[in-house]
Length: 200
Image 1 (cartoon, rainbow, N blue to C red):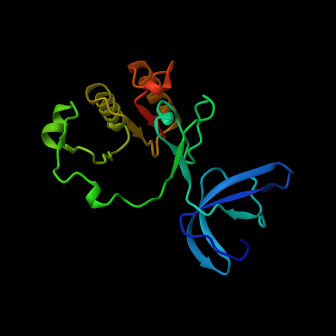
Image 2 (cartoon, rainbow, N blue to C red):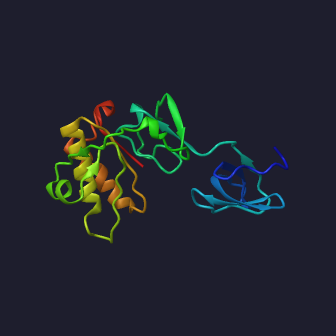
Image 3 (spheres, one colour):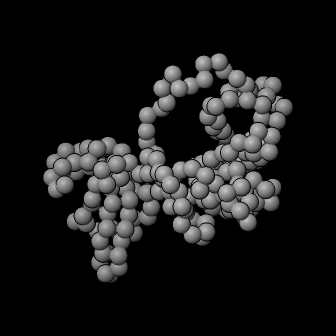
């Protein structure tokens, strides 16, 4: 509503026309309330064509993305929109990208080691079953190759599924990863429901 500031982390939808008369549509995420009916927000795509005075509408919720088996084998952008030219995603549910962590009572109380099938990891830095895994390192040290091997092993040895978030990945690297997943069978191009990974 007019005059009411959105909550932090809410998605704003900015739509209008630029000075050339072309339509502009942008989603931004509120990061800070500045007062005087102003907020600071991060644009989730290019800002070309934005002009001062465009109307920003509060969606009333954080950005939501599709979840569930319908996402397997698909590639999504930061807004949860498919970018793989495979048509719309027929997901029965969506989930906000910002939500509370699970309660401690919902977590496994006895930690179990997750066998990755990569001996050096299992021996020197074992992963906890049900936990999250993140890899940090310089360019060209093999982070993507290692994650690819983990996802492949999870799919083939444990029958599990994975979500790969390629934060900071180059488009070429993401495309190469997608093609390698198809070649290894982790993504089943003929029947996406048999795929074992979703890429973001």
